[in-house]
Amino acid sequence: MDFTNPYTGTDRHALKGTSLAQAIRIDMAAELDAINLYTAHMETAEDPVVKAMLHHIIEEEKEHLAEFEQLLYRLDSIQREKIADAQRELEEHGKAA
Ligand SMILES: [Fe+2]
Image 1 (spheres, rainbow, N blue to C red):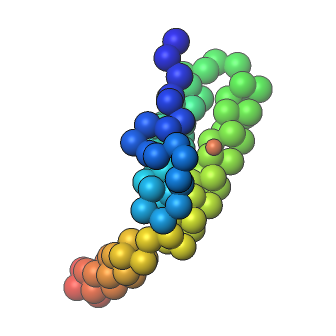
Image 2 (cartoon, rainbow, N blue to C red):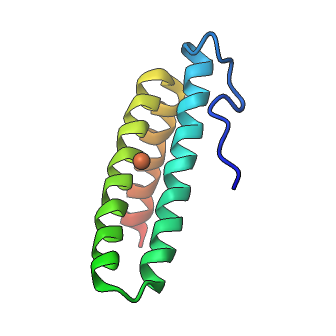
């Protein structure tokens, strides 16, 4: 089994600013991958206790993803602006529908 290199795409010795934001994006990708992996396992598990525990773990991974998002917004002002733009665009499309 291969495990993730924790420093893939980042500078191991100077995680700050842009490189720290890159690391947080990698962390977010790992959370998304975990959510999808655990969801697939929950959907196919037959044991109800295992299903319930996987559901609980998935909820925790979603919380982790939200926390990483907040860290990224703190580190990347352009990302913050883009999220605000996307929310405005979504609201505009919602008004049009
Ligand atoms: Fe997590």
